[in-house]
Length: 260
Ligand code: NAD
Image 1 (cartoon, rainbow, N blue to C red):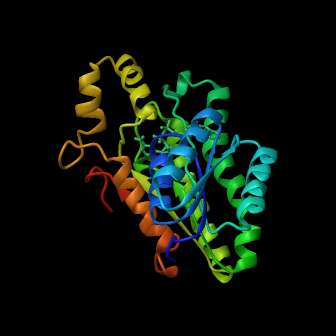
Image 2: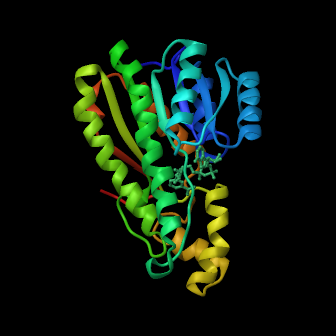
């Protein structure tokens, strides 16, 4: 599936990885909905992307944990462009704490954004994809879909869970022409990661420099962060892939931190 004129929804696209994916898709000629909680940033991103690419972009404000807001947002895309071809479920946050100190409310918030958000956006898009007999759904997992780290119990749990959702969708969606994948990035220098550096330094009792060098990049082959561009390239490849050969698979982009 080439992305020229394809209709794509990217959640969490007002910043970071989602923004880079939306830009990459619009550069390939796609129509992209910047679906995000942050209204002003989503509108600014949509204007910027529309101005500098051959594609189109609109802002769609939604909290991915709200079924009503997700359904309204997807309906806005359908009303504007008449369908949906690609969903990238990417919106996410991070809350770090050891399990014995993790507030139950934080646990539930994390699972709601990462798992409910993936489920609700998928559920809202599938009727349109099934009707047209084609579609691609990409979930933003993480190396933490495969590995565990201290302090990240709800994040690791949710990111592992996305593998299961993608595999079920691969099996259910095949007869409707719908494919699914998970992208598993290593550490990418976005606001989500910048926020964690001082938090982890304090929790682990080490310097911020050591959090970056030893905790985040210590197991890469080259000491390099994965970039938003790296992840966007994988998201373009998966969205544009022509058939079911890769459906249900997860792709790790982590500079060798995690290999399988
Ligand atoms: P980011 O903070 O730069 O962007 C996240 C975006 O999600 C923001 O624009 C935010 O407004 C939006 N968002 C948050 N909660 C939302 C909600 N309830 N509804 C709608 N939008 C919401 O973070 P990022 O690093 O670009 O992360 C994007 C995804 O990539 C997340 O799922 C994250 O877990 C995953 N990821 C990030 C890294 C990394 O190192 N940065 C690594 C692996 C996976």
